[in-house]
Image (cartoon, rainbow, N blue to C red):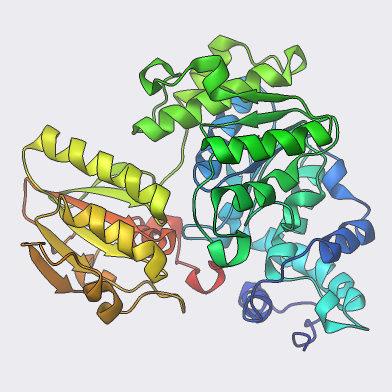
Length: 438
C-alpha cells in the first residue's frame, strides 16, 4: 500500500521524518525502473553534474570520502552522497562536506512528495522508496548548489541500485567479498556481476584489490561494454606499504588510498588532480567510524565499523597491531546485524579482547544477546557481559567499561557506531536511528 498522503505542506521537520519513516517501514525496493521514472519526472538532475560512481563490498564509503577530499583540495565544489548516515539523516547528502540541513530536507520532501504520489497513483509498487527519495535529493542538491563533481556511493549491489541511473566519468569497484549473499549471490563471482552493473558503455573502470575470480568476471563485463579497465595491482603492485599514504589508519585504507589515486589519474588533466593535490587530499580525509581513535573521559576509545566477513579480517589485523603497540588486550564493545556477520566478527574480537560487552543496536535486524552469546568461541577465556550503549556511555565524558590506561574498541554495525557517536559527540545532534537502515 502507499504511504499516507503527504501533508501539504509538511508542518515541520518532525512531520517530514514521519513521512520518510513511513517509506522506510515498507522495506527496501530493489530494481531501477522506479528511479528511472523519478529522475525523468524531475528533469534528469542525475545528468546535470559529472559523477564518480563507487561500488564495492567494503571501502566504497572511504574511497568516496577520499575522492571528495582530493577534488576539494584541487578547488572543485564537491557533492558527496553516501549511506547509511551515522547520526543525522543530512549526512548522506553533502556539498563541500556541509550536510543537508533540516530545512533543505523539508523543502525537498515538499517537492518530491507530490511527484512520488503521482508515480504511485496507479500502482503502489511504483511509489519511490525511502532510498530513492534520498537519492533524488542528492541529485537535486548537487545540481542546485552548483557542484562541479558528484561522488556517489552505491547503496547495495550496483546493477539494481537506485544510484545506477548516473552515467559516470569513472566507475569504481573497491572490493568484492561475501556480504548480502541472500540478495547478491553466494559466490564472489555472482556478487561481482551485481557490482559490475554500474559499468557503462565506453566509460573507464577502476578496480581495487579484488579476488581473482571476481576481477575476471568484471573484466569480461567491461570488455562487453567497451569500457577500459585499470586496476590497483597493475599500477601500484601488491604491497600496501608502497601505496599512497592517508591520514586514515589501517592497511586497508592504504588500499583505498591507492584506488583513489588511480581514479585521479584516470580522470585525466581536465580535473587537475596531480600527484601533489592527491597527496594533500589524502591527508585531509574526514570519515568517522573507521578505526577512529578518540577519548571519552579518561578512556582511549577506538570507533570502528566492521560489519561483514571481509571487514572482520581487517579488524583482526587492527586488533593484533593494537595489542602489540599497547602491550594490553583491549575491552571490546560490539553489536551486529545478522548471524552471518556476527560469527566472523566475534571470532576476530575474541582472539584479542580481554573482555567483551555485547550490545543490541536499535535496529530490527540486530542480533539478540542469545544469538551473540552462542557465537562466542568456546575457548574464549575472557569475561562476556550483556550491556547497553546507554549504560556504557551514560554521558559524553564518561565510559563505564575498561580502566584508565586501557583501550576500549567499539566495533560492529555502523548503526551501533552511530548510536555511540550520538552520545559521545552531542554536537552532531540527536540520532536519527529510525531512518538509518536501507
